[in-house]
Image 1 (cartoon, rainbow, N blue to C red):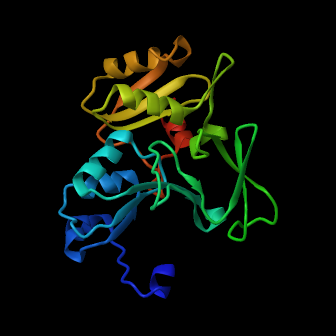
Image 2 (cartoon, rainbow, N blue to C red):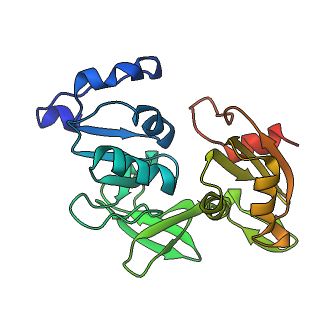
Image 3 (cartoon, rainbow, N blue to C red):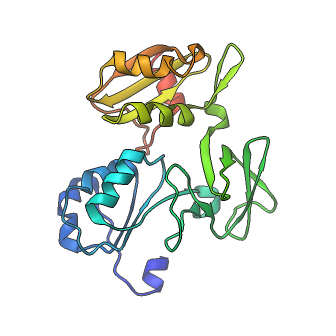
Length: 239
């Protein structure tokens, strides 16, 4: 609705029509990483910038998008309770890969690793605990470590799946999708050209407490009804 208020054309495409995206000559795209990967092979010479949201943007995809289109790639973060995005890397400023940037339109603070937000766009009257685990780098940019409910407890070691995924991806650049989950053991589902032994070695190399109890190589990681990754759903699927 904001797009329409300022008077520029907005197009929403179903996945089946993605191959025709280039015909609309978009100047801005906002999408999840999987969609950005799918459109990265098109000729989108009118693009001014790209925004990624909903799940962590892999470093390799970030670099590929920048090399392919030569425009800023902004990783961001939002939720229903904040009326869409509430953190973003700046368009005019430094974009830091692996972070969701800085607060946008809201206030934020961290208590015991939990992210709290408040502001006029937040559907709560006071500080709201988002349930996300975060930290900040030296420049104040926020990094999502994962959901508090997704944290894996292996013999007292508290493991954040997003952090593990980031470290494994650094070792295995040919991973397409990678999801780590579990309750008291580490489980992993992935797609891409690496072998299960590659993934096992990468995880175990992070510490014996990261040794996986399950590794599943799939064509595509299962999603929930909303088309998103659900670690709890995967944990139930792969008992």
